[in-house]
Length: 149
Ligand SMILES: Cc1cc2nc3c(=O)[nH]c(=O)nc-3n(C[C@H](O)[C@H](O)[C@H](O)COP(=O)(O)O)c2cc1C
Image (cartoon, rainbow, N blue to C red; front, side, top):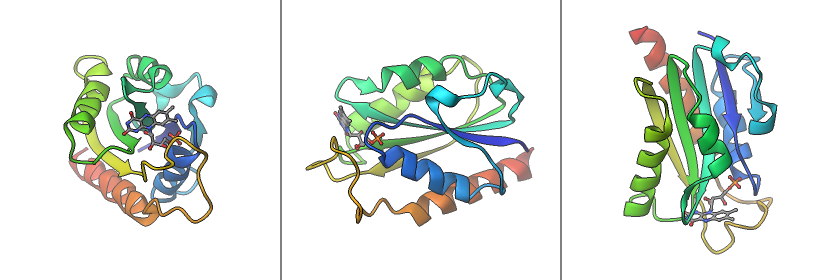
C-alpha cells in the first residue's frame, strides 16, 4: 500500500498533525504541503489529506484539490477551533467529503480541535495537539484499509 500525506496549513497546526500522521505510517511515507503535491499523486493507493476551515467552510485551495483526488483510499484530517461536536464541524466535514469526486471512498476522518482563543495565530511551542492520538489514528486506519484490501 503506497501512501502519502498532503496538508494545507496556515498557522502550522495542521502541519504538525500531518507529521504525526506520517509518523504512524510506514517509514519514508512522504508528508508534503499542498503546494508540493507531486504530479503523480494518482500513483498512490492512499492519500491522507489535511486541511483547516474558516467560518465559510474548508480552506478553498485545499478544497479545490480535494475535487481532483481519485485515489482508491482517501483519509481526511481537519483542524478546527469550533467545538468538535458542533453543527459547524459536522457541516465542514460533510462539505470536505462531498467535495471529492463521486464514487470516491473515504476510509476515515479525524478532527483536531484547537484552542479558539489563539487558533488563527501561529502555533505556540507548548500547544497540546494530541499528536500521539493522530499517530494512532493513522496506524489504525492504514491497518484497517490493508485488512479489507
Ligand atoms: C484565517 C483563519 C480562520 C479560521 N476560522 C475558523 C472558523 O471559523 N472555525 C473554526 O473552527 N476554526 C477556524 N480556524 C482555525 C483553524 O481551523 C484551526 O484551528 C487551526 O488554527 C488552523 O491551523 P492550520 O493553519 O495549521 O491549518 C481559522 C483559522 C484561520 C487561520
